[in-house]
Length: 299
Image (cartoon, rainbow, N blue to C red):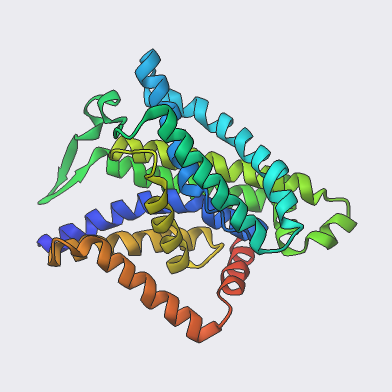
């Protein structure tokens, strides 16, 4: 019975990983860019909401409503000032640029907030530790809420891509930007909107991270690793694959922790390496696999 409970807890944990990895998958699917500042942006958003809660007593969920449009604007600026320009210099330059941005963000947060860990848990009352029972299984309220938000956000992006004009433009640019330009689609503007959407999802992930755990200025790096592992397991660029990859990663970590106290991270890394090698040996070109799946699910 305890193993079944660990699987359930791993599935809920996977919801957080899917929430975190959603932006990585979306940005790669549209612009074929891996944003190494992803984790740092999530932590920056969390610190912003923490500042609002600590300074003005604002509930973190209301703070999140403020953070989402602010981070969307940051995403738009990120594309126009960094990604758009660096992409013209080759595929490697955007990755190096976002790595540099991550370093700047991490050290700026350290300079402003110091090295002390912070958390939003004290500002959400009993949600941080409340739970409910179903039979002999116990589920945390915050974990269930995180999973629901992940499914809603991924489902919302899926619906947007399939049923809205901007979604169709995003798919057209992702498929062939040059051809889209020829039929009147402004690829630069569409990519800027996609970057804004991506960073808005990062804000949600960062706030939920700070509600369920503690953060410090350098928390972004391990979160980036978890996000990257989730999207690689599920397939780069596949939104529903990201959910499946997050769940697989969460279950692996949960079962690993049950086997050995040091097995939480190791089990997740092992699963990632196994899937990575299988994809590498089977297809040779991992990005093409994920990109094809991104276009397939959106059509």
